[in-house]
Length: 194
Image 1 (cartoon, one colour):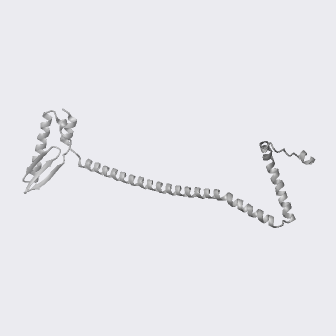
Image 2 (cartoon, helix red, strand yellow):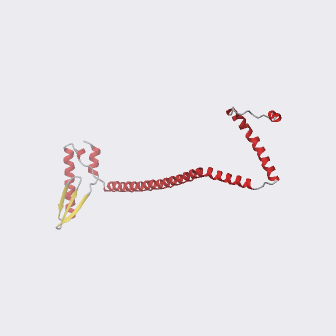
Image 3 (cartoon, rainbow, N blue to C red):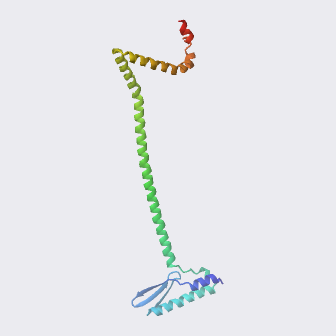
């Protein structure tokens, strides 16, 4: 005999449901599948307790008390229902938050992509047009320089700038000079002999 299950089955209360029909009272226990009736609530309840006791006794005598269903707790069912509902709400909230996050990331990604594409096109256009603009500007400056007379101070300033530029470029030219074997290298000594 399994006393722990026996104690559980006999000591725990099964939920008894009361129904009134044609001035008669009916109690039933769903888990045990028993029903009792009476002309008064007390008599119907007493009959239910007797049937419950007999059923438990029969299961004990057969050595099958462990097959007797345990009472379900309405409180446990409510807690399970509440937990299921809370889990459902959490899942809905998580899915909603995830969906909103995906939308925000998608929107921001599209905006950044559009801006990057726009900036790249502007840069491409600038790089395409810049040499042409610079060449036209130089052409205009050369044309203007040739048509107007430079002052002596301006000429001296240009010569100074050219000397500075020559000194800065000279090391690079000396490194590149072997690429031009056709031309002889001009050295300070050679300048003095010419």
